[in-house]
Image 1 (cartoon, rainbow, N blue to C red):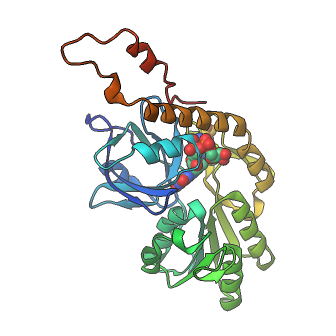
Image 2 (image 1 turned 90 degrees about the horizontal axis):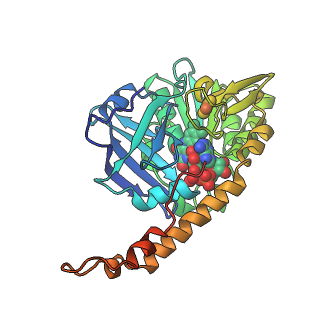
Length: 322
Ligand SMILES: Cc1cc2nc3c(=O)[nH]c(=O)nc-3n(C[C@H](O)[C@H](O)[C@H](O)COP(=O)(O)OP(=O)(O)OC[C@H]3O[C@@H](n4cnc5c(N)ncnc54)[C@H](O)[C@@H]3O)c2cc1C
Ligand code: FES
């Protein structure tokens, strides 16, 4: 596991791409991580010294370039703050990983790799891993609408078949990824394995489609994580009659055994705090925009007026909230 920054003071963002107003990609220089990363693993990121630790899947890695790629959906305070601040040339304060057990991409001959919403990018390393190990790969990607589609060519390059699904039918088939799985099963009676990544409600729907056909189905769980090393117990999930820690026992589990209702209930536990953190941060941003920093700067020859310094210090810090 690597978190050393080589003394350079953080991990440099070498590329950024915005796929839509909520989804963005960051490519980060970290040769050791790029060398060690395997499909299915994730990192814990702190964007600045006082930032929250958040888990993000390694969506791609390039061992030759020495970079890892994260694709992030701006859903709350930290992911929006990163969307605003993470520019090419800037650095992430901490990047720890690779964490979690790698996915097994070795034995299956015909697999279906399913990604929906923020699960699209994380399924990519699996699809590529299966392809490299000689499997016939059927990719199924789900987006709300055509405008949000990204990495279509990247997936097409490692999938033997690619089924695009949109909620509104603006591209591919009209429907959910679970409809895509039904199509794939109708066409191929010899699917060995399905792996699905996305929101819990999506993964729950996918396992209900494969259950009657007894097709082995893995899902990548996304409970709240804090340390990512099995210490805090925050990422407890119920799998069959066992309690597992997703950060060290997963994040991939047998989807037919996962208690999705328990997972969804636990994900909502901090909804109030998340809302409050978002409101505090939005207000701080609004205040910063209202107060033009130039108007606070004293003329070069004068001492700062006593009244201005306290004004600036009243602005709430975008501090960690949990
Ligand atoms: C193994 C794993 C891999 C993930 N990979 C990705 C990814 O590749 N791209 C991506 O966009 N998102 C990914 N996530 C989810 C991402 O960690 C959360 O969206 C992020 O932590 C939200 O933080 P926030 O402050 O922006 O939003 P908040 O307002 O704090 O939270 C929004 C929602 O995100 C979830 N969440 C909040 N804090 C955490 C946390 N510490 N750990 C996990 N979930 C949390 C909760 O369901 C919450 O309701 C992954 C989660 C896990 C567990
Ligand atoms: S995140 Fe703390 S035990 Fe898994």
